[in-house]
Length: 186
Image 1: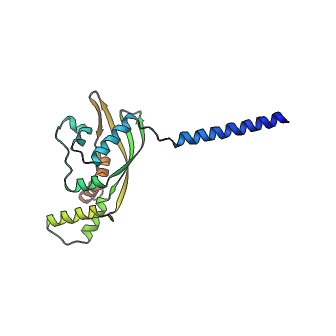
Image 2: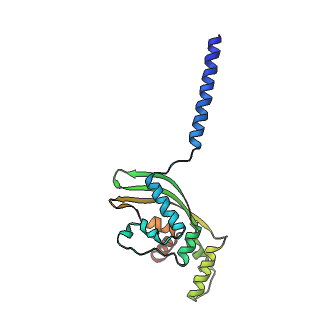
């Protein structure tokens, strides 16, 4: 009888220890992979409006100029937040690493839609000034984008592939707004 009680107590103690260890391990922050860290560095550089942000992009292999953050692009970068979710590969695209990121920024497309509906202004300078003020407003609508950031490794290093989804997220939905406006959403 005593040995069953000792066994039961031992099992309970081991169970408590294993639960405590599991909770401890789960509470530890996840370490970013090399590709995730690269995307984190790219987005952090973009967020801080570093002119060398272009060096993270594949286009930098063809263009050695700095990236500029004038006007609307600078305002959007000021509002950008992001969270790296995961990394994955695709057996069909073995040359690419996909880093899934959640990017939140002002919803430029919605701001422009609202502005167009409520204005008769025709002076381009006043329109630009008003849009900049709306983007900078603390009440500006926000939007979250789920973006697979594509990273490709070359012998000279890793680079981010700029695509429609990433461009749209970095510009607060502006790219989609333009395409929808020009092509009617098709």
